[in-house]
View 1 (spheres, rainbow, N blue to C red):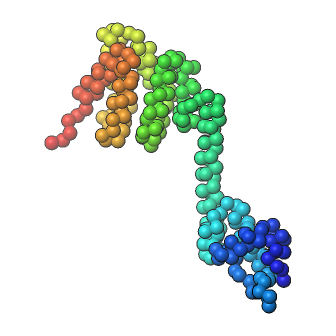
View 2 (cartoon, rainbow, N blue to C red):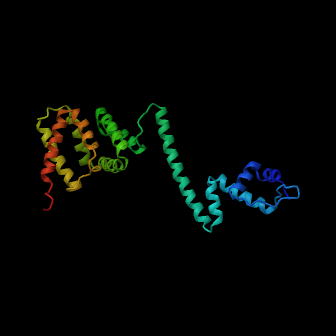
View 3 (cartoon, one colour):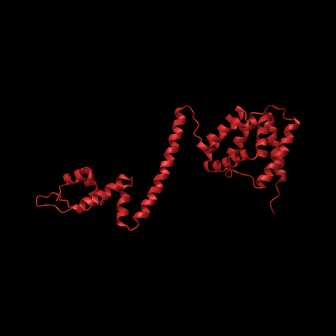
Length: 247
């Protein structure tokens, strides 16, 4: 028979921890001796070791009681393991962002977006374009994270298509052209054709009523008269190419 202090010493916990386990129903209260002291048997030590093992694995005390009372311990532990793996992944992503912040990179963009932006200069995009893309993705991910992920993956996939990549590069390069330069209108025609070939009539969109798309395009247009005219041409031609809804 062991006292609570002896049991705590053998198992590697404190007497206070054992009392907490008693209070929460995780460890049955043992019989007391004639002096009123708890006396523990080997079976109590075994039960305490099991509870301690689950607690050290990160299982919340409330879940330990539930798990030990049911029959699905193995399945429940696998679920807890999956949850811990997801938490570890999230913590690793947070750690990566903290390292970037410590290095002076104040952008809270996801790692995949940071990697995408890092590829752009090597593909021939201007520093102006990369900076603009960084700021606009920052706005979109902050306001519409789920839609942003979908649209970002769609846009980043364009880098693997030589035809689409050349169109986006040309979009960047007409920045300083006169808005009525024939190259602006020619690019609009090619972009409309590529957009219809890629998406059909259902173009990617944000949540209905969102002001963010207009805000994003407004920021693009404000930096270049040529881009502003290109956007007007695209809207006009894409709108005219969209079939009327059935009456």
